[in-house]
Every structure is written in structure tokens, then in C-alpha cells.
Amino acid sequence: MSIFSDYRVNVRSGEIGGDSGDKVYLSAPGLLVAQYQSIEKSLHRVRGVRQVRRIELIPSERRHFELDTLLRHVKDPVLSVDREGRIVAANQAAARAFGISHSQVAGMSLQRFLPRLQLAELLRGITAPRYGFPVTVRGQAFTLDWSPIALAEAPGAVASLAGAVLTLQPREGAQELAVPLPQVLWDLDKRRESCLRLQQMAPLREPLLICGERGTGKSTFMRAAYYLSPLAEQGQVRVFSGAVFGEPQLAEVKGLFSDTMVLLDDADTVAMRVQQALAEALLKGSIRARLVLSAHALETLAVPLQQLLEPQCVYLPPLRAMRPALGGFAEKLLENTAAELSASAREALMLRDWPTNLSGLSDCLMAAAAHTAARGAPVVELADLPSVNAREILPWQEWGRGLTLKQQMEKVERSILQEQLASHSGGSHSTRDLAGRLGISHTAIANKLRKYGLVPEASGD
Image 1 (tube, one colour):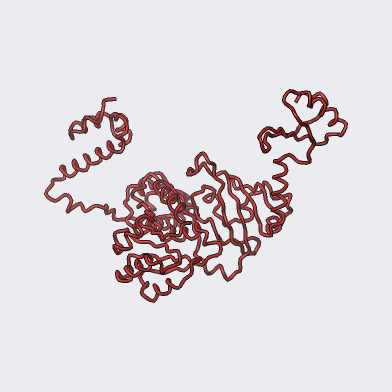
Image 2 (cartoon, rainbow, N blue to C red):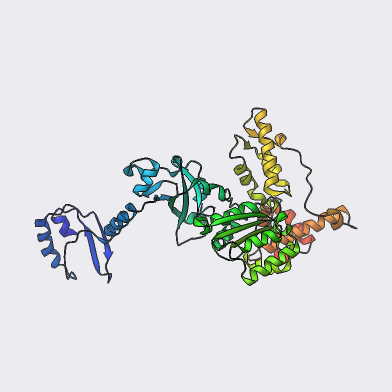
């Protein structure tokens, strides 16, 4: 490098590589012939240098030039975005689709050209769609394929997404009616594990089952499975309701080709004889289409279907199992309104069990937002929430039969403490740590542990 400095030659970049890994490439734009001839002699005197020659492009420049040339001749729009949704690079076809000069594309926000795209959720990397997502750019219909760029260090984490590569393919307007409405998944709390499992299993060919209580989002996950599968690029989709799925519909499914995805909602409402016939057809290979089903629980299906679908099951947790994230779900449901939740309203929502889960929460929040707007306020207060009879999801009367109220409360309290201790069995337990988790004093915790004979798992500090 001192030789280049002596001859006042600016070295812009460099890299090490070559077939044997023993070559040094230096980029020196504007290097004169006379300068090169003088530098060549000096470089040959450097220990270890066996050959010096001049080339047109260093390897990284050549790769960039070849890729740029390749993309320039691709007729469909191709572009990449970073984690903030800014366009990093795009080909000429993308610039034409967006109606701007190619030199202007880099650095612009993708949201400017696709305002209805739920970009923030997509960039989290755990959301649908991936393939065949219908979008419109300046009045022209396209199908969008979304390929996340993940960092190898943490492929499953939210922070692992470095950006994405997008491909747009022109789509006929008639095709738009043949696909289900795409929706982004909410990967909060325990639901994130369900999203990851769906992401892993949706591209496979085996039948897939989505299980969950009413209102947990089974239909949403079924539609997401379609857009997370390569079938969404060129394949077809057929949607059936379990309430009307009989032998004629089963015969129709048997006649579909392998490029079709079949979504069967509420499969547990299908007649048992039809469920058994469906399982038999799957075992014999009579169904070539990809099958995605939803049910309240695996146990509600016919036994042959249970055995077939158990390894390919995605479970959606109920809302009451995700109380810490309930405020986050509420914020997402209120995104299209001008209302925000007050702290007291948020706490009240968290205390309810929500037997109808997200659908019940949505109805409650929409009613509260309407009440808030009617009084001209921006914040949803406790008084704006519809009064709901807070029935707990436990058979208290049968469970507590023969016990006094005090005995029932002690039984519940002991179970809570046991569960807390079991969930942290990997390390030592302190009364202060346990008290912090339960929101009471460490002295009270120590007394309760002694009372219920749980002292061996705890220490004073």
C-alpha cells in the first residue's frame, strides 16, 4: 500500500480470493499506463508476490455487473428491501411498474408504491403471505412473491430478518376472485410459536391441521398456509365448510390435481363416516391435492384422521393463555380506529377469560371505540367497555363440591405456587423472586410456602 501511496494512486477497494485463495485484488480507478508500469516493477520486489497483472473488473465488481445485467433483462419487476422497508436495488422492469426513473428507485420506501401492503408485519419475517400475494401497482394487477433474507446467526428470531427480495408477476384480473383474502398473522406471545410452526409446515405436501378454540384465528391461519406454500404462485385453491362437506364434495376433492390446495374449515363438523372415508382416501393416495383442515381440537376428529394429522398439527393458544400480550392484541385491533386504551381498560380486558377469544375481543373493542367516538374522546376508558358477565373457564361448582370457600381458595393458591415453582425448577428459588412474579411481599410468600409444605424449594433471599 505504501507503493501506491508513493505514486499517488487512489485504491478504492480491495479483496482477497481467487481459486486458491492466494490472490489480492485492488481497484484503482483512473490508473495511468505509465503509473502501472512503474508500480508493477516495485510490486515484483515485494516478498511473496509472484505475478502482477491488470484486469478489467475485480471479482465483486464482475459479480455485481453480471447480476445487474441479468436483472436488467428479466421482464418481471424484481427488487430488494432492507429491514426498514426501503428499496435497496431494483431492475428496470420494477422502475417501469412504479412509473419512475431507474436511478430514483434506490432509497425510496416500498410503502409508497404498495400502500396497502402490511409491510411492518411482513418485515418481522413470521407472517403471511410469501407466495402469490395479489397486489395492485398503478392500476395494474400483480402477484407478489416475498423471499425473506435471514441472518444465519438467528434464523428464527425477529431480529434475524435483514430484508427481503420481491418478485412481481403480472396477473389476470379474473384470477383475483379465485384466491382467499390474504391476512397477516399476529405473532405475539405464545402465538409466535404457532406462526413459526405454520411457516415450517405450510410449504410441505402432507395434510396440515390447524387446531384452536372458537375465535383463535383458525380460518386466518388456513389462508396463511396457502400464501406460505409455493402452490400460491401458480396453483389453485378450493375452500369448503365442514358443515356442508359430504360425499359429493369428497368425490370432487379426489378429482383435483396436485397443484391445488383444499381448505376444509371446521372439519370436526363433517359426518364421521365422511371423515373416515377422507382418511382412507389419504392413506390410499387417492387425494393428490394439498389438504389443510381446521378443527376445535385433534380429539374432535375421527380416530383415523387423528392418527394421520397428529404429526402435522398447529395449535393456536386461547387468549386467556396470553394475558401479558392482550394489550398488544388490543392495539392491533384498534389500529384502524382513532382510539387508544387507557391503563384501567387494559387491565379490565386482561382479567377476562374471553371464551370467544380474538373474535370476542374484537367485538368488545369495536363497541368501546364507537362509544368513545360518540363522546368525542380519544381514549377508551373503563366505562366505554361493554359489560360482560365474567364467567371463568372452570366448573367451580363441581370442582369445589364439599369444600368451604376457604378450602377452595387454599387449594387454588397451593396449585399456583406449585406451578410457579415447577416452571422455574432449573435454578434456586428465592422468596423475593417468587414474590416479585406474584406481586406480594416476600414475607407472605415464605409463610405460604411453609403453610403448604413447599419450603424445600425456596430460600429466604
